[in-house]
Image: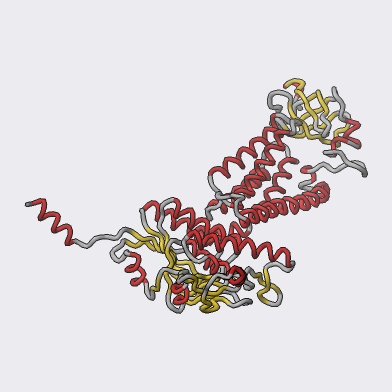
Amino acid sequence: MLAALTLTLLSLLPQSDGGVTRVRIEGALDVGTQALLRRALDGAEERGDRLVLELDTPGGDIELMWQLANTLLDASDEGIQTAAWVDDRALSAGALLALSCERVYVRAHATFGSALPVTLGPNGLMPAAEDEEVREKLSSALRAEFRGVAERRGRPGLLAEAMVDPELEVVEVRVEGELRLLSSVELDDLRARGTPHEFLRTVVARDELFNATGSEAVALGLADGLAESRAELWAKLGLSAARETVVVRARSEDLAAWLVALSPLFLIGGFVLLYLELKTPGFGLPGALGLACFAVVLGGQYLVGLADIPHVILLAAGAALIAAELFLMPGTLWLGLAGALAMVGGLIWSFAGSRLGLDYALDRAIVVEESLRVFGSGFLALLVIWGLSRVLPHTPVLGRMVVAPDTVGPAAAMPEAGGAHGRVARVGATGRALTALRPVGKVVLEADTALDFEARAEGAEVARGTRVRVVEVQPSGRLVVEPLGEESRA
């Protein structure tokens, strides 16, 4: 009796429909949006909430659009229920975000569609690519991705495709009592086969992008229903009594957007500073700043959800291999090459995202674009390095950071390999350490104390001022030296 009374009382209490995490995405999409969405999804997963996106956006970059859409698709695979509410507009990339959610609700007068890839030119908006062949490849990839995402969610893929391609005409026909949406090409095939059908209407005319109102989106099956207010949306989702968590954009998302936008400059700075470190004895400020630049780049990608632990491990392994080549096993070459490949691969992977794959055309395009970004930054860094190699030897303070060649003509890998340096540097020559060799540093030889050489200590660390003897002259011009004894220190 007591148990029955308890169950009756419990049944009279308000029942919670579970939790909901609500995040509003408005304005043009940027990488800060990606960081915001990632944070909202992490919170929803931790609390066991359903995620609801409120959309009011004109869209954003194609690469960013695809990464955001894949983030939502992956969230569903991980068990997070997603829903979108278009309370004003979901255009271009915003339309794909809505289609990526499991359920879509719209206001009656909201707008939904228009995803032609464009760019901002001197005369306003213009096609994203001037070349017709390039434009067709881009349009073809986008059509496939829009259609694929829509069909994955059980929505008409042909209408999603018509959001991208103005050449696609879509008609509605009745075949054997069933309503169907067909392209004009499919309709011609139907007629050619002699299949009985009834033409009803043209849904999307040729030379027009598909852009539906909320009511039209529901009628055509692109949206699950109308919701004129948040309360109505909660009721239709069964979340009226749900605990609500609102995620708003924070300064960390703005910082992430700023860091990612400036990442090419940080990459260039990192490459240049590491070059300066290689030309400076020991490990000093340029090396620390160079590593800090790469850390900033990786940190920005991590904040927006692109970089993850594997990227950090790959970059760290690459840096360790390069350090081993320079300081422990100079001349090995394969260690340095493997390290450079690991670092370049880690950078490209972190820019493209942890979900990197080659199955989709847009994924492949993103890999190519990010590869060009990394290699372009490296090329610009080489130009800066070339300029520094010309300027630094003639500056009073930094003149010793790079050694200027003494002769004009074809140069070897390092200035020390030719000219006056090549004549002085001989096995058995003696001199003293200008800097500490840990194990690399600078030495001068008694044959010409006006010249200095990059050298590596044979064995233990050599203190500054210690007399040394050359035991090997490497093809690059770097010397391998051994100490002559502590009693000979200057």
